[in-house]
Image (cartoon, rainbow, N blue to C red; front, side):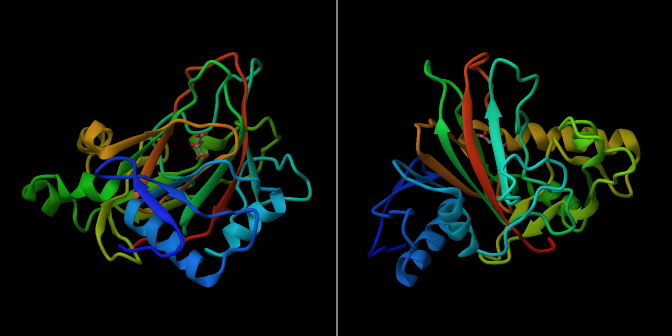
Amino acid sequence: MSYQTIEVRNATPSIGAEIFGADLSKPLGNQQFQEVHDALMDRLVIFFRDQNLSPERHKEFGLRFGKLHVHPAALTELPDHPEIFVIKADEKSKRIAGEEWHSDVSCDAEPPMGSILYLTSVPPDGGGDTMFANMYLAYESLSEPIKRMLDGMTAIHDGEHVYRGRYDVDDAGKTYPRSEHPVVRTHPVTKKKCLFVNRVFTTRIVGLKRNESTAILEMLYRHIETPEFCVRFRWQPKSIAFWDNRCAQHHALWDYYPNKRYGHRVTVCGDKPY
Ligand SMILES: O=C(O)CCC(=O)C(=O)O
C-alpha cells in the first residue's frame, strides 16, 4: 500500500497500524478518507492519537464509512446521540463491555462493519489495554481438513444470554437478535475468508450434536486467541481504535478496577455475512 496523505506504521507484522497525519476533528478530504479506509482494510484495526472528537464529529467520521448502528440493548446515555455507545468502568462497575473475545453484535442479522472507539479517560496506573486478533490468519492457519470441514457450516449467534438484564433496563417482553451466520465468512471488500465465530455470541454450530459443536467451538476459540494473531493497544486519553468487525475480534482487559476508564463508541452498520 502507498499513502500520500497519511503515514501508516504497522504495530505488528499481522495486524494493527498507527495512523499519523490525519486530524479527525475536521472533515476528511476524499483522498485522505480513501487512504484511511485502505489502511483499515489492510491492517484490520487502526489507531490514532491525540484526536479531539466531539460526539458530532465522531458520528460524522463514522458516517463516511456507512450508516450508524444503534445498539440493540444499551440505554443511550447521551440522549441527543443514540448512536453513541458509552464505554465506561469505575469503582461501581460489576462488569465491562467486551471482557471476552468477540466481534461486535454478531447476533445481528447484519452485524456491524466496524467500530470506532474514542477514549477520553484512561486508568492512571496503566491497564485497560484492548487486544485485537486477525481472523484471516486464524482461518488461513487451520489445517486443510479442518478448513474443509468448516467451509459451508453455519452457526447461531444469540444476543439473549448476553443482553438480558445486562444494562439495568426493564427488558421484559423484549426480544434480542439471534442470527445464523457462516462459520467462515468472505470479507465483502478484500474477498478473503475469515473465521466468524466468537465466545460471546456464538452458541452452536448448526447440524452438529451438542458435544461435537461445543468441542469444535472451544477448539476454534482457543485458536483465535493465538498470540501471533494479536496486537495489544495501549490507550492514552484522546486515542482512537477503529476496527473491522468482519475480520477482527477484540478483547477489552479489565485489570484496572477500581480505576476509571471512559469513552464513546460509534459503530458502523454492516451487511449480511456470506
Ligand atoms: O473498551 C474497549 O476497549 C472495547 C470494548 C468493547 O469490547 C467494545 O466496544 O466492543
